[in-house]
Image (cartoon, rainbow, N blue to C red; front, side, top):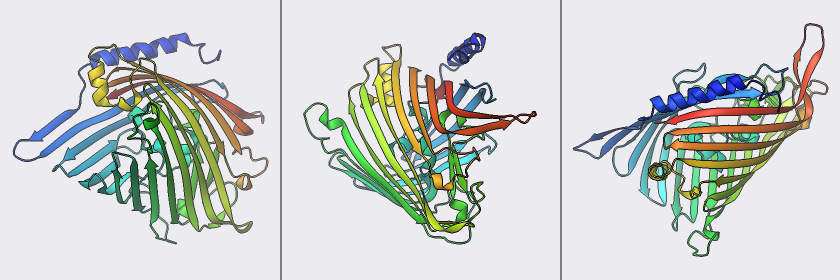
Length: 418
């Protein structure tokens, strides 16, 4: 705590820069193009996030400014039924990376089809937009979830959103351009089912309850064995809580059969308060190394979170449209978020005395967000992560070794949505 807040000058400069940017960009808004003769519209927008992240451990040189995201988004409608989306990420070394590229055709509320590159259906946490997320980063277990992939998906909802479903088949290799192996070429199946059993009920509280299940399974090759679990303070660095891949330090891998994910989710939204929780299990089936016959690799994670809009705004109405209307009459929306999370890594694939992976990690997060207008957001996230096994940070010139057994990170973020 003392280390984080010792440099008050740096913190003052950050807030000054944020308010200057907010003032200069006060008129930022999405750009819309409409064709008068046909039902075709194009929306051009994006998200920009500027971070300062402070790590309390002086042995780690990870405190830094960072452009967390710089994303351009293009959405359009060719007809009432057909829409499309393109988004590009300009942050990082892989500049101008294609993030989303898909078309969506809605036959009716109960059946629609999506094709292209998009988010695989798994987990409520993954489906939330980056710009709408209440914390600086997603939970530790997010590293185990499927990302974006190329495929085909059907979905829909029935009985006024009481039941929703998404089922798809994907390459299983990640975004376009990801490495592919030559051993197997089976599609990866993914499904997410969500139920709100009391959505039509008139009794208070009950309509906001929901639960769901997600599942993925597919035959993979060694290029798809890729686990890189990170805490909040490790995002954007080459540090990790647990790494397992085809060139792993835990033993040379020779063969793998399947990859499976199972996720459970649930929550309750009532007025300005919401509670969310998720549990997931991640497995590699038939993972074989030079040391032994094929065995499984198992990983587990869960989180619970509490979100409160301190200004009293209903969370189920927490959309850009609603924010725009509300901020015409009030200064802004203030949100408090609390999270508790846990990760468990398979100890079988950790080499003794290597100090490069941990069996367990517990984390606690406190985040405060302030939305000045529908286009601007200020966020402060304070996260503490406890690690069960010491992880080596570096070897000093004199031969001494420094380790970490916990992590404390403070993230300050200024976000622009346009």
